[in-house]
Image (cartoon, rainbow, N blue to C red):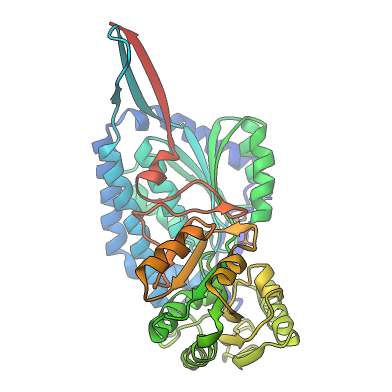
Length: 459
Ligand code: ADP
């Protein structure tokens, strides 16, 4: 068995099986057996099951939120939001299941009848991270089921309890046995077994770029389809005409969620020189007012980081930015929380950082806002794009035409204009470059699980 621990205290809160190849293959077998009956169901029937699960999830919000907070550490209020967001994925996928239908295709020849039939890809896999332990699975499972696929899933070893609770909820909503199969244990062994077996026809992964590369190699063996949502390194542009208070509010909403540990958190603040000082001071004032503590404490706005390595990385980024001439306006180090491990980092704002500081070269994944000055909009765009990653970007400006122009020049999958939180279960979430490919949410998310069969009949 593998112990699951509260990241705030290190206390064991549960344990899950240490599965390996036999468990991974067994799960594929169960998914393969369940596939024919599930794919035969109509879209409306599949939608009904998904809606049943959505409704149960909303009823169980408190219980699920408590599980998320216990294993991830995020504030309860954010965990409740994650449950709502997960339920939205079930609702969105249900809508799409109802819409998915064969399409007639116009032919140039009168003696041909052409159709495109949406078939499920088959048995599919999911590997999910710890930062949204429920939502990252829901956004893979719901569209897979909508399309008629069955699934094997491996949650992060740090946060498997939310995934297990989700699978139980799906069963309670009437999902037949074998349609969703959670496997816990060693990640590389389990995914290795899935890829070698050959029956898993697609894998959707959310995690690091490094692991994404490993999975791309492994997928080649049986030519398995992939969706990869990898690291982000989001720029947050504040232009000279921005409403500074609104920009600060957007930055606060995006930067400190999950203690800065989301792939769409603004990581690089790129601010026009004329507003740099005002923006930095106001952001620091707001950030220093955030209460750091255990996620289960109702007053908490920023919880612990997930583990000691995460804390060490954040400290490296802070030290590097300060050594390069950045001014630490607030935070800058750890905060002691009584009865807890030393894993809490104070919300940190660093003004005037160098364009080549560590935090501008790689994702920090922590509650740190490094701010760099730029002299023009074009310089802001160039700095924003000076990275191989391309998931989210944010632009703050009062001018709609500028927003449109700058937004279209940012190389990434998601652009937020004057907002700091952009995720929506009905929209196509995903990136480009080293942030991966494939989209999750809405019809785009379901499309990832559909294999179109083209039928050409003589008539
Ligand atoms: P993070 O740094 O966010 O934890 P990872 O890519 O390490 O990102 O982890 C995301 C998910 O990928 C987790 O479920 C983890 O267990 C899994 N994982 C890590 N390494 C591998 C691997 N070599 N093969 C398959 N899955 C992996």
